[in-house]
Length: 306
Image (cartoon, rainbow, N blue to C red; front, side, top):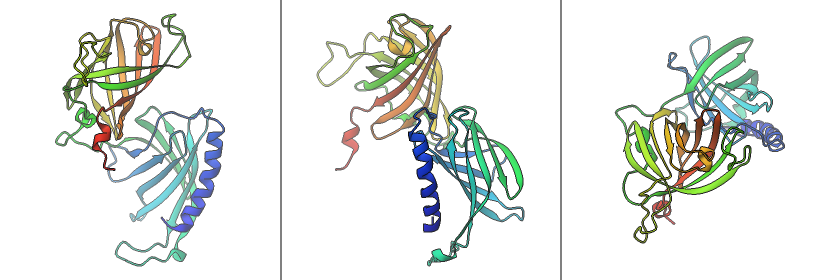
């Protein structure tokens, strides 16, 4: 992107970031992904977002004459509504794709309208914009990058049912309808071990607990899990979603201190160098628990080149 565009966007972004940092109650979902309307292939929007920060959106769309058009938007969140909005900018005058040289003095940036994104959930939302006087509203979703004939879904998590268990750091918070031993609206954290027992392209199951005291040195086996989980994997853009069932024989912070069978969903699971990040939402009657999870691969440092 040209220096002129960067100067404009950076100046605007600083103001947005200061507003966000002054109020940490911003949305917790990272909407960074490719977005589209599956019934309208041929156009879309790429969103890049700092965690709890503004969204920089680039549109690959077409003008009224059918020519490919590049417009961009910088969207800040409204803390009261959860809607992101900002100006829609159009650039022109850059070098053609076939040109080796580039003259930044020829680039022009114009404000051509406004744009807003209202998330319905982590994978879907409403995109509304005005462009040179025309108003458009589109329903968009994250674009899956994998197809059934590629390595996809649960295999992406690099969790295999062999070897030692994975360390899992879980921070949880529940409503006021769970066990008295787990106070409501208070964040509580624990470290557990997760041992995958079955991993397929469209499903996963694992045991959750602590390492057996008699396990060999350097290994972690969970013979008596505190909880088990089994779910079906689906893909939402670059993230994975796994609705399933959580069964706990002992009260845990991510089950609200209760035991039994719960409806549970692992959502927004993405891979990092350290492991898999995601969310766990558990419901048991009127008891609701939301957790943030990092599943750390034991050998993640071994894969790095220093």
